[in-house]
Length: 175
Image (cartoon, rainbow, N blue to C red; front, side, top):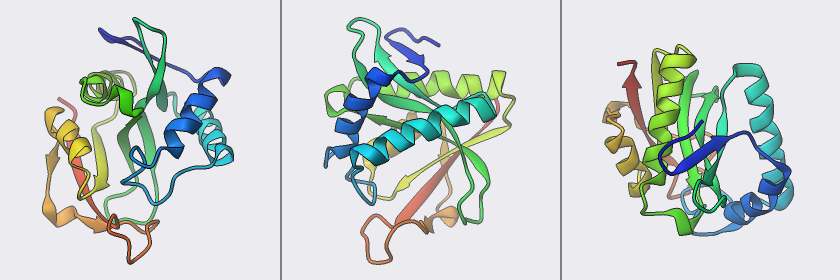
């Protein structure tokens, strides 16, 4: 899939090193429980690729069209952990810091939402993040997603004493 400035594609072996670097960056991973080791990062790529085979969608690798540079991912993933609003398909993104502030996450997410609604036939897509992740929340709002504070929750995979335990949920229904 393509957008004006991005190629959204399946993963290549050459993506693994820059993806591991992204996952090890403390600022990129600030709103996640832990940075990932190389092995954990590679295992995530393997899970992402497996999801494409199972669902027909997943977290697409993002490549800048102009430079061919890998900058992260954006896409759709089925979430099934223990929360009252799940299971649901979530849209998510993770970009290298050098790609922040350029509108790439919003651009790619719009295309992923289109795929989810038009091609995958989903009726609703959610997104969630730590309460303090204002950058991701701004993307969710630019996408037209809505937040209901009554759905805020403590993420079961985050330590009870962690400042990122409390999460928000945003929703978007098929247009």
